[in-house]
Structures are given as structure tokens and as C-alpha cells.
Image 1 (cartoon, helix red, strand yellow):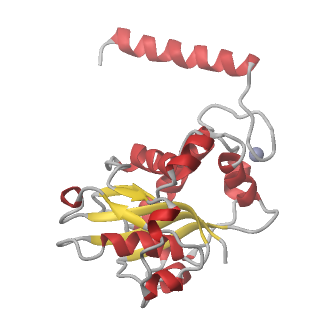
Image 2 (cartoon, rainbow, N blue to C red):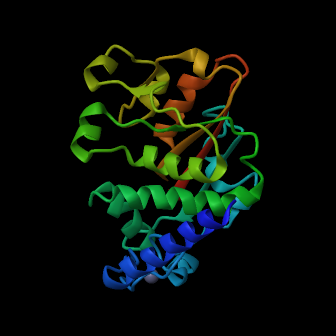
Length: 239
Ligand SMILES: [Zn+2]
């Protein structure tokens, strides 16, 4: 790295500081101006987010939700989701208030912290829980895709947004397995390219896990592909 490169990067940082001085980015939760190296949340709000803490445990409550329902290697969530709480505010920002960047940054923050657990070292591919095409068009983006992009930027793992797709409601009518009856809102997914998945350890990513039925449906579609392993990570857990 030459002297000029260093000077350019220093100049860039100074310029950034100046821009922030006049147009400060605000913390999503407390609305205080962010300082350098803070993204999305100020350090205090980031620190105060309610962690699940069991993200460091193998046999945690999220994992237990899938026992007997799907073949899962590991499953976990970073945060506790509570009605009216800070995590709801965060999730709503990218789910209902068009804040794509918030989803991306949340994925990044989660990856930085949970990378240390060691559970995700063998992940080959990130797959976001797909949205209906119509819903994606309405929102302009899939928030789980944005979470994946944030995670990918930290862990250097590829994301695939096409292999798994959500089918339209009408096309699910013929599919009346016991499993389909078990899930209350019928959400059926389909796989477009098995070869992309073969032999890989997949991490399915979603924003909030509640009953786990959506993630179960996704996992079911991936199960049975040769040498595939499936793990699950969500930003938050709602129970
Ligand atoms: Zn804050």
C-alpha cells in the first residue's frame, strides 16, 4: 500500500466526518447522532439490545422448536423479540418502513457477534427465506435477503436468492400432505436448482422466528438432497 493510497483513504475519512457533521446519521432507536464506526445503532443501543444468550448453546429453545419436524444441524436467534420492544422497532423499520439498509446492517451486526460462537464455520451458502414475488414487489426488497447480504459481508459466504422460491397460493391447493395441514398458514416453497445445494451446508436466514413453520417448510424442501446439511439463523425469536 503506497503513501498515496493512505492519503486517499485518510481524505475519504475526513470527508465522511465532515458530511456526518452537517448531515449526521441518527441512531435508529434513540435518534442520537452516530459517531464514526457506528452504523444503524449507537453503541449504547447496540449494547442494550436484548440478546437471547442461548445463541452460544447447541440445544437452545429455537433448535428445540425443530426437533421432530425438520433435520436441522443448528438453529438459533440473536435477539429476543417482544411486542413494543426495541427489537420490534428494529424489525418494523425494515419490514414496514422501507429501511432496506437497516436489514443489511442488522445482518452485519448479528454476524459480527455470532461468528464467535463457532456454529457457522462450516456454512457454505446463505439462503434467505423467500417472499412471494408480489410481496417483494410491494416492499421493493426481501428483508431476509438484506440480512443475508449483511451476514455475507462479514463471513464471506455466498448468498443464493434464486434456488428456493415461494409458490403462489393457488398452486399449493393440490398439495395436501399431513405436513401441509400441520402448518396453519400454508406456505409452500419450491426448489429451482438442486445442484446448487448438493453437498452444501445451508444456512436458512429469516428476520423473526415464531412457531418455526415457515422455516420448517423451507427445510423440508431442502431435505433429501444428497449430503445437504441445514442450519437456521434468525435475527430474533418471538417466544
Ligand atoms: Zn441509540
